[in-house]
Image (cartoon, rainbow, N blue to C red; front, side, top):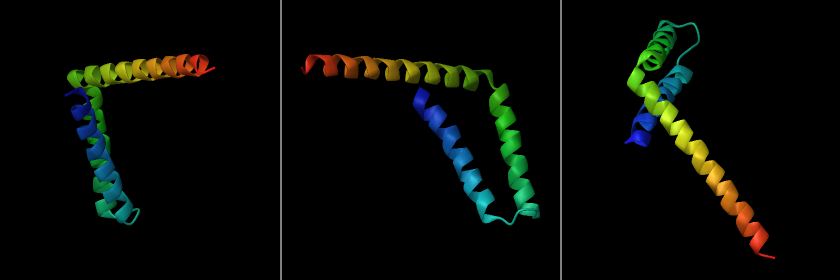
Length: 80
């Protein structure tokens, strides 16, 4: 659930970014997409539940990376 919520928001911004690239800079459509990106960004930043979810995801991701590093070091030292 945690990853799904983060992935949904990330894919939405990726979609908006792709739309933005297809438009001519300075055009009305380009400006509208930029405004949508800024608005949705601020909505996500002020959404307490999303921010808590994002922080928890980052914490768990960093923790998993640390554990993977420890396992790699352990395996490297025990192969000798």
